[in-house]
Length: 84
Length: 154
Image (tube, rainbow over all chains, first blue to last red):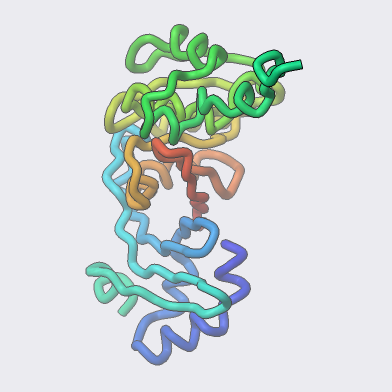
């Protein structure tokens, strides 16, 4: 798990509860991170059968950003579909 | 002594050659090591095994800046397998990823052409390939040398 996700897990969980999102699902989804943010993605194994021959992006379901210790969240068009 | 007789090591060291962002934004050339690597990877699905210390992911990012093509790197011991892809993919399917894993390779990373953050967004295929290896994470570099780490879930 991404270090940022572990560090701010309690805030992430609170955000999920306040916004009716399933934290358990969120925690189980694959993550992609940079220095200050995490993309939580939905991975559909049935769509990855061609490996790197198919670079159709896995949908981002939530963006978690950290700036100066403040955690902010950005929902995407896929958030409701995969996290509610 | 005049100023003209002094070699300027700063200028010599900061030509930008081989820097992915400099290659992309200013048309700076690849460095000699990167040129040699590219010459041995002339076409889609060209492959080469090189010593581990002769290439890193920043080099592949520079090659992506220069060519607009994806490149993938797999590492086993002191060797690296480099695979040249095309504009939108690399010819590594699930069966081959499983073979590489069985042969002892790890999926070090690959590149996606592009300069924005979303160019580093992993695909379902990227996650499926990563799932074939014992490791939990890998990296995607874009054409600027920026990178993100992605991690599978079991």
